[in-house]
Image 1 (tube, helix red, strand yellow):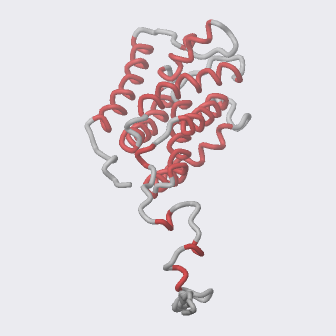
Image 2 (cartoon, rainbow, N blue to C red):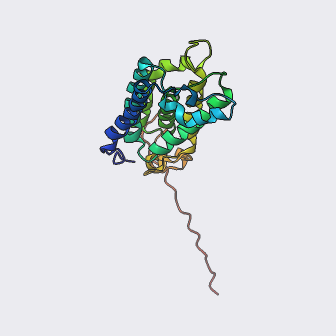
Image 3 (cartoon, rainbow, N blue to C red):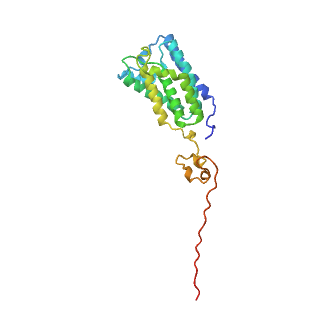
Length: 236
């Protein structure tokens, strides 16, 4: 395992920038031409509400709502693209679909809009995937994400804030966890170089480890003498 998989490219900056720019463009259209995009959000358990699975992450109620989602998206999308470049677009695409569908199933009878569900997908995926890889840099990234965004976990519960879609947050958390289990990262699998790194390693069978007693003191191995058997023939 080496760090050659962590390669910076322009997409690390371009992807989050243009994604967030798209959100602001949609909001500009909404206020400039007085469009009512709310009805394009997720309305649970209705056929017309299914369209919101695709459109809801790009619709926001006001400027504060949009701003609060923009900063985390810039950071998390950049982290996802840099550390998980091979899985980036699948996590974003399927994360939007899975979280949207779960929200459509469990949500209250109201329109659910905003990119916060995608934010929860990203936080969940980055955290759980880093722990699963057991690679120190990705584990550190997981702990950093929890340190910065750990308080978000309270908003997956009902009645914490009636104005937010806790269902969308919970759906994003679940979707991120599922995606972390589905998408493997073989590039981060540790290459086993030594016998003692194998999970079934038994030190009792190791010739080197046999030279140490229970206290860790170096001892000589007992000398094994070969018993030679001589056949004697009687001469007549």
